[in-house]
Length: 129
Image 1 (cartoon, rainbow, N blue to C red):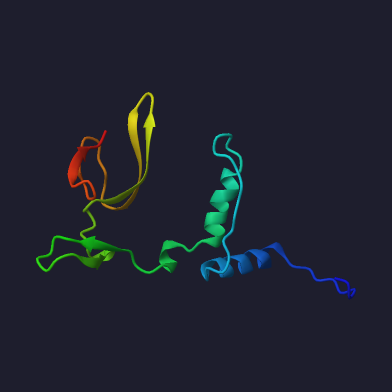
Image 2 (spheres, rainbow, N blue to C red):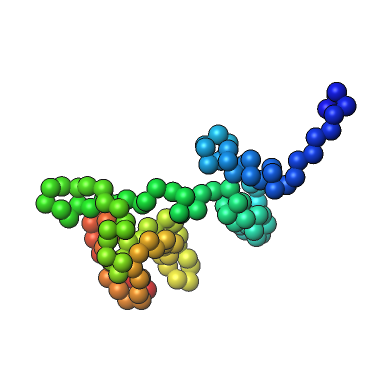
């Protein structure tokens, strides 16, 4: 600084401070890149691991259970049978060769080829391919 004092900070200390501030919602790390040319993808994945909370650091996931007779209620995911499929389609795209594709995060259960699955918001079913 202008007072002649030099301060050094290690990369590990800087990353730890950025993680603490991110977890407290005080800052939002911003990274730039291009998935089209595969530039910046690995630093983005590394930043997710370095700065965002792991699942064990988050409150338990709760889902809406509308099957109870008393109406809809929030239920911890841990109370579901482990074989019951629970997944979230977070992106849907159309591929020229394959048609409609859905990117899915599976929270529990197994998604099998040819299986009929219920679509919660669409109140319908579809077959996996």
